[in-house]
Length: 187
Image (cartoon, rainbow, N blue to C red; front, side):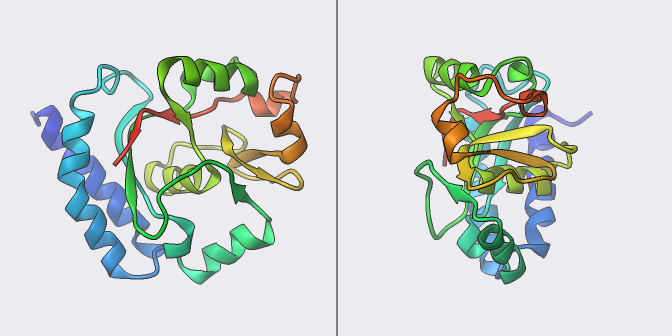
């Protein structure tokens, strides 16, 4: 039987390898591998990471380091990440919760719940990376509160229009109530 740390290491290595087809250079992957040990050490201090639906460390590649085809997808769909995140180098989200805990909350309720416990919602870029590495999402199963767009976006990751984002406590269609993922720290 594998230890928890060994199992986490294998899962994170698998996640990094899953990103190989969408990154612009191998150097990005090497940077993630170099940061992996530190990320897993930080995750080991989380009280929640062993709960179902929590992922210890999710590798994130900022959109400017993704292949041109993926970057064009972001541009064509006019998706903007509205929360401050590291630029120019990959990073890890620590103790990511995939949205099960917020499945019955409105986006506004989820946002307030995150603020009260020191967590942050994911941006579209982070949700895209999560989908690529974890294979956990289906159609409209995830709402990226840290991003907005001029019109609705179909597919695995739902984001709000800027207007809906400004009215987070307003009632939204049921498809947006599937869950809002969050994380505890960035490294």
